[in-house]
Amino acid sequence: MVYYAHMRYKQKRVYSWSPGLAYTVGLIASDGCLQKDGRHIDLTSVDIEQLHNFQEAIGRKLPISSKFNNNNQKAWRIQFSDVAYYDFLLSAGLTPNKSKTIGSLDIPDELYSDFLLGLFDGDGSSFGFVDKRWKSSFMFYITFTSASPLFLNFIKATNTRRSHTTGGFVHKSIRAESLAYAKRDSHLLFAYMYKTGHVPSLTRKKLK
Image (cartoon, rainbow, N blue to C red):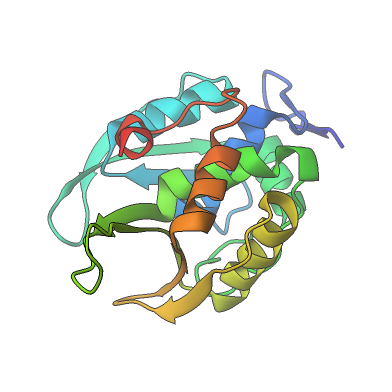
């Protein structure tokens, strides 16, 4: 489906599903916000590369400003008005004030890996450690964080269907919920997310 900006815009914009737009939906689902006015979108990150990746994926050179978050840490922000893109995000299942209410999203199967990479770049992480109970063992995990258990259950079910993971468990973290995968499933998810190379990705997370 294609979405057109209202005629009050000087330039008509068109949005239809593509790897880049699927990646932006993942970023907005994690670090973004749809404002209640029905036209403004906000994306904030402490990593400026993420905002450059968003610009590349959406195909627009949007202004980037700086701000300080609640922890007095410098962050970077893109805020722009685009009715067509706002409606495109609504059609995918995103809503204003989505943090605790987001649930299932309508992502085309063939573009789910690009969406998942955007989600991982936004609210995902990976970590590893040596388990002293077993000699020469190294454990590592990949996690996705959200304030909505419904959303994490949707991600878990879709990961099982699309990337053939068999595990994954949702647990309470400090401020939200986390969906965690152990070693075997982490291998599957990394290979699945980075398989196409059609979209940008955060360098530090890919290298890690």
